[in-house]
Length: 198
Image (cartoon, rainbow, N blue to C red; front, side):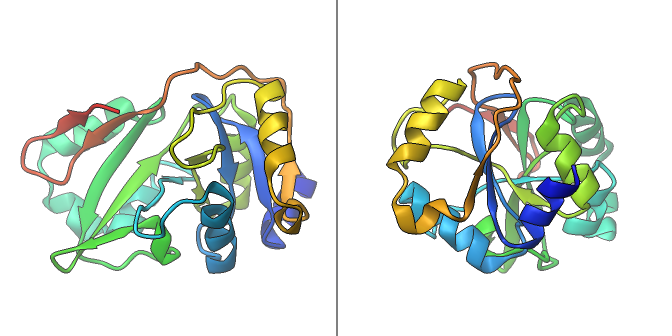
């Protein structure tokens, strides 16, 4: 575990299986790390990526505890119901999160974030919990291409990454199986929660 935490502190990016697909995980507060992930994926910076939380309690911190308390019990129950799990929850807050800008969207003077928290049996969640800071939770693929569900395809993706970025990537084959399905997005930014098809 220590070596993974050291990699993250040094701004490196983990190419590792999540519960759903293989992903790229880096310190979500390190702008250069996040920017590098976007460059590797060839993803536009105006398309935010989700973050992996270290625990459920952190939702109050990242979104503002008072803001959460103003939500209805329905929203609170949804958060408790779906996390941890194969879901990405979109939340809205008027408190600027302590994250790199590509990890959130600004809309009408409010901040919209995509939050993930998965089962502790997965190595990536254990790493996030031990690191005690949010990590990026974006699929390991080039923008617009299919997601990766196994180590062989992940290695092929790694081999296609330009050499100038490879020294920042740490390939971790934890032998864990992905479900092969993208996380279900649940939008909690409106009065009525709704599922978003992907």
